[in-house]
Image (cartoon, rainbow over all chains, first blue to last red; front, side, top):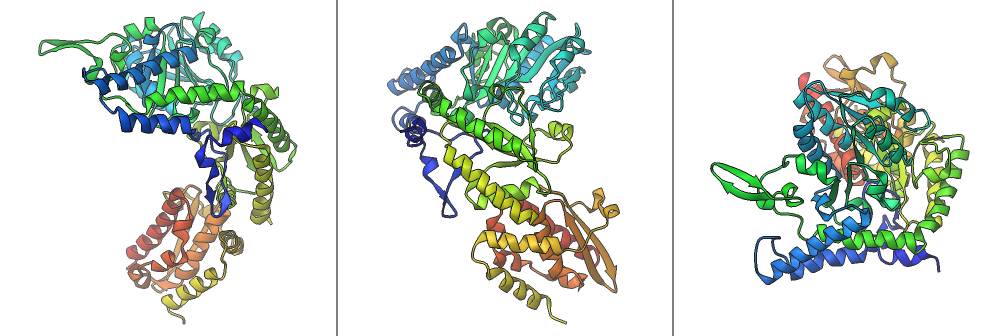
Length: 409
Length: 137
């Protein structure tokens, strides 16, 4: 039995039918499906030890806090962070980036400073930096991509100045699916005293991430794209920086002492976790990351690799199709493919595919500047997880052919 | 001349001949293809209907109190939908359109079969046609 068949049993949503047809879910980059282990953890906490964290002495509060804090250890372990204090729980990647944009900005960014983002970022890694620049009268600069979707890292040394405070780069673009040379970028930036934030929303999904090996200063991701509950997320930050940054939000357990004369803050990581946390959601990160490991180590990711090569070949060999994010080597692309089909509008394609049971994304993918870069108003994106099968990929192409025939005639 | 309600009933009947939604899409695509060409110079910002995922342009000409619509879209299914709408309302008086309840759209089942963002687009098309009519009453 293929690993993928075993894995599929763990994801109840995959057994659903839409319009009487089996659901073919190819929108994993938007959100992944959740395995039973995650759903069970979620309900277990809600049913058995739902209590607020860190504050009460009663029994179920202890259990809930233990779940939450042991999840921090699991995430630290997964990312190979130096310390559990460097793992901050957030509501997602967007919240994590906003936290850094605010708190790092308060501590380190002055008028006339520069922030560098790449052209391949999604809005969550653009807008918070635009807001910071507006607040601090700083300048936002952009590292472009070339026609194949690769970052122009050759231009990076020329863009960095003594005033560049932080560079923000996606580990993997949610549109292009190419693994960016983060380690190389970090080295160039660090030799220019520039901090690096890596948006790992897609990067965390298909590969093991080692933040110490990458050398980045911040790494963020959302739980819901990597099988965990929605409303969960992680900010990894180097302790030295986090220590110097003021809190993002005030209230809850982020305090040391509160007096009318002034307030002191809790040590890391609580300093950045204001208000009541996602009690049942955050602990699902542990079974979710275990599932990700299991799929990698058990062979499902390797099976997906074959499906990826099949899709890449189909897309690249079809003269009607323009693929965005052309890998120099297939190994640098994850199974995430944005494309357009000549004479067919992306919205029409997605609409017709939907009626055939195929769920894909269409539109701007929260990356309008990148759409402008390629001169399109939108694209179709198919993104796979290790629970997607070769048969689904084949059905996708049959459906696409049928849709194009309908639309183009 | 047929009344607005009679025309709407015909459209509903045509549309209900197709059981499968894929066939309904084929019908809309066909409508979109047959829509008379829309002059490029009319594809201006002020003719764009706000709130649609794809771009939809609507142009209105008034003659003897009647509104004549022309439209286009870069997505063919959307073009079919706007074609269906203007096929019903073009040539009607501003008052007739302004007073219509647009309930025939509900009877087509279009809204439920479009994703929420696309249903918003449909609502925007209807709102624009209605507003245009009200402006000419």
